[in-house]
Amino acid sequence: MAAKTNAVPIFEKLVDNEAYLKEKIGVGTSFDLGIRKVHILKKEVHIYYCNGLCDTQYLIELLKQIVQINDKERQTAQAKQILENRLVHQQVSLVDNLDEAIDKLLSGLIIILMEGETNGFVVDVRSYPGRQPQEPDTEKVVRGARDGYVENIIVNTALTRRRIRDERLRFEIIQVGERSKTDVCIAYIKDVADPGLVKLVKKEIQQIKIDGLTMGDKTVEEFLVKQGYNPYPLVRYTERPDVAATHLLEGHVIIMVDTSPSVIITPTTFFHHVQHAEEYRQNPAVGTFVRWVRFLGILSSLFLLPLWILFVLDPSLLPEKLSFIGPNKHTHIPVIVQIFIADFGIEFLRMAAIHTPTPLSTAMGLIAAVLIGQIAIDVGLFVPEVILYVSVAAIGSFATPSYELSIANKIARLLLVLAVALFKVPGLVIGTTIYMLLLVRIRSLNTPYLWPFIPFDPAAFMQIVVRRSVAGAKVRPSIVHPQNRQKQPT
Image 1 (cartoon, rainbow, N blue to C red):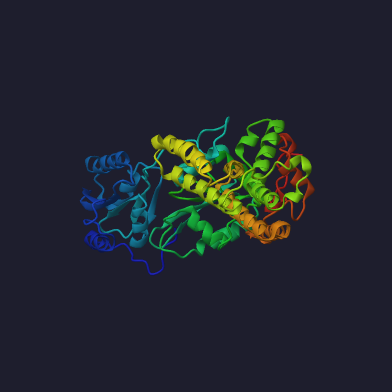
Image 2: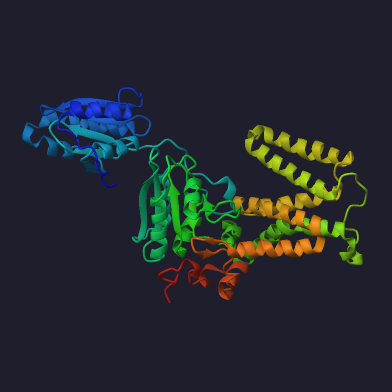
């Protein structure tokens, strides 16, 4: 990181440096910030560290090497060079101002200052607390890798590098947040990704002005795409390194934020959110079948309830053979009200499932299914058909790979149901038309949201409809404007 403007230089007297650090960051006040003082070749050396963010074993080994200098060396004039050579670590750099040293120290690196020197040494012995890579709960597959991204950005870059050992893969890091100074990494393949896209992403991230990224990648997303109150996701999240690596090879840019177990894929369209890794872990025929079933579930989550309420309100639209559709008994509560109550009830259950401890989740499911659902029907609050169709629509939402897209579709579904309840057939036609027009207007980082459907690209659209074999997919998607269109040598 470049030195800050008007940065405070490192003083030759260590007492001045110590006083500044005590005043600036609370060394001696904050229990997790420590200082170790040793004498090397008749010169005092201060070692600053942050407990919990650095590896204690590395620090002890460095101290052993440093104190042994007194036993083997006598050239006091070469004390700085001797000290540098005894720092047995692969990542050692110089720092010439205290502000930069503080940023490094609070990131988990150790700072070594020597009496009479205006430069210090920075040694990267970070060891952030965190969990081991494991399969993400929201992106499970029957067959495939079981590792997933974690909250440590160093581990996440390693998981990605393990899958793409290309010398042109780049990880550029930027610190964002005036107080949090959170590490944000931009990943791309140099000769594949569009330079304009990389430049745009870096520019938007560098312009983020905020105290801290406490909500991690979500905060970065809101600054990046400026979504406002549009419920539809403009970036795709993934916790799977294989999914991120696949998109890197297609020409996308990946954004990793330290402390976030998911990464951001940019740019993305609507159809990026309806694909799942499971489709590519099966053969093309099975993958296509799984994809079509998933599309059917997504369409059900959107249009099943509006169509059903339309047939309930206007049974004359039904053919004679389908006349059984609709409630078979009278109820005191309007069907439209029942639908909203049931839909919000399922949303309550979803929220409760998130906040309920795992041992209690089974009991909560039994209460919801047996007690609430059946008793609500028995007392006349709901007709059975309402529970049926709301449940099918909810299952379609759960079948949607993207959580963000499923919630956006639920909002759209409720609005369509309301339009149908108010205006019947015109409400469905006009509501669906407005819905499509709104999706067409959306652009994510200058990318049409409904591509390749609108604007229509026949070859790309067929790859959405049918899962082609890897050997047959020889070109990268044109929507990301890759520098090299060919995936495979011709």
